[in-house]
Length: 247
Image 1: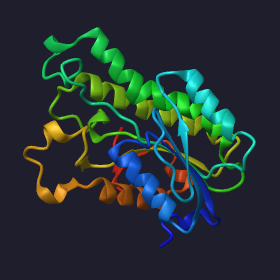
Image 2 (image 1 turned 180 degrees about the vertical axis):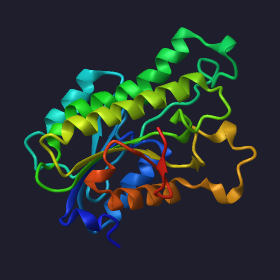
Image 3 (image 1 turned 135 degrees about the vertical axis):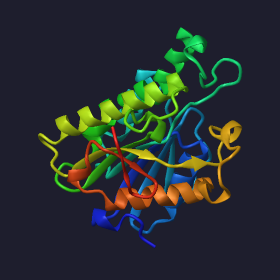
Image 4 (image 1 turned 180 degrees about the horizontal axis):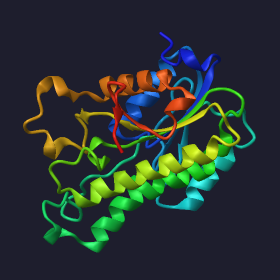
């Protein structure tokens, strides 16, 4: 099955955050796709290689690391797809979603923005120039429905919501700029739904079983969204079911 049939030719893809649940599933499904030529799987600690998968080291907290990873690919053929699959919602006692403004802490806010917003922005800075110019290419980053200002009905989760909202704005800015000289490039945010991964495990209570996706199911949904994207979709955020999420 060719999940990326709309790209027209064999695709070279890069997944950042390949050691995570969704990232690893994306790498596996891309590698199994006959329409994908090579998958570059970037993570802080590169995993063992597999057929069509080239592991690479990248720490999105460190711009020099991001730049070095991009430089390694600069002399190769262009990329058709870049997906940033990293994200951070909690990290033990050091970082938990805030239930009230009384729980706001500068260090936790900074960490959330670093991983959820700044990191993807730096990947875009160094990897957008590696994408195809004259055919369909996609830069995507995992966002979240809770990053939508218009969809916020519950409040709370200040740092995560704000960082994802910042990511969504970054994607919009990228789309506007890139469209000036790369008419076929699409920049989007992707909401995978609630996925049975480390990120969501403490918050799965009350989630209906049919709405709790395995990483493999989530990856399949996201690649379906990617395959259906057109230049008119650039700058937007889409959920796993292909529906646009309001800003």
